[in-house]
Length: 159
Image 1 (cartoon, rainbow, N blue to C red):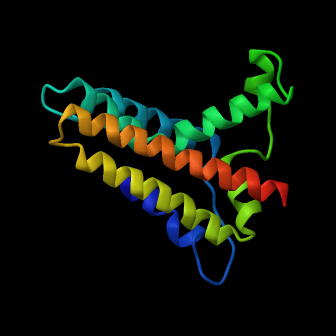
Image 2 (image 1 turned 120 degrees about the vertical axis):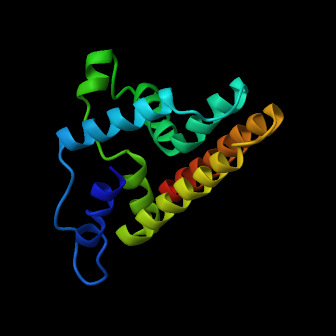
């Protein structure tokens, strides 16, 4: 799976030309299903339920944050009023759109999201042999990082 995902990089992250191929809906759904399955059945920690819960949460934090942020924003602004509207809604309010608007460059937006994911992924790796309090602290750290990103995003939109 990693190899197939890395196979997209030369076509989508080239210095001199724009992205040329994209993962379709079916591929995205399959990739999400496999990753969710790994989060559920993964052996994240030995006899430590807090760390076992925190590791996949940190790995998928960027996705969790984006989904939570757009859901809250869409409900508060009245863009969606029912679950069906929420499922059917298509907009340019996802993290990658907001980051692109804030930074003004697609490459910088992608690199920023990569940086977030790598930072939180390293935190999840650090949890492998951690104590429960370390798991709690790293999840709090992830939350604080997203609060900072949200503040930057909000202030960037006001300009």
